[in-house]
Length: 201
Image (cartoon, rainbow, N blue to C red; front, side, top):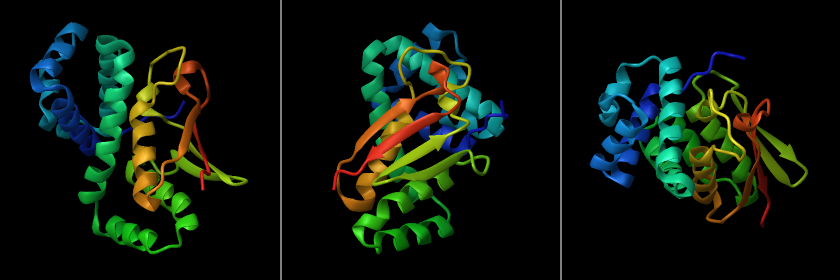
């Protein structure tokens, strides 16, 4: 398996949004119950990590959230993913913002794939970890590294933050809701995580 990485700056934003979503004291309780460092409650802590350690922390913290909240964790992580998209877009480099502006000027049917490719560009700590493919009228986002699933095993897909990011990215692109399914997940033993986006329009 390739060395899994995740941008430490995005990890910081994830923890900021998590703390806002569940409350700082609850985040501290989650960390305590999971035996994780209390420093993880401070978003700035993650700026000091390299992208490999950030990926491990990203996976471990989400596992702690799933353990603490059970089935309720999915909704929390989906909401964080949705909020993370706009945060990343707002704080992105000039080149990314320029590309985003160009995407919004495309005809609506052409925006979806370009928007997902933009999301892949923002998330890719290592180039080509995330790719977007056309399946007839549908799209497939493939995450070969999937930091969420790093060292995790589960009976169901666990990449809820990525799911929320995809959903919000597509809504930003064309103002429509899309049918999204994580049809393969590394946590379930797959070689890569795959998100199928069905064309609802």
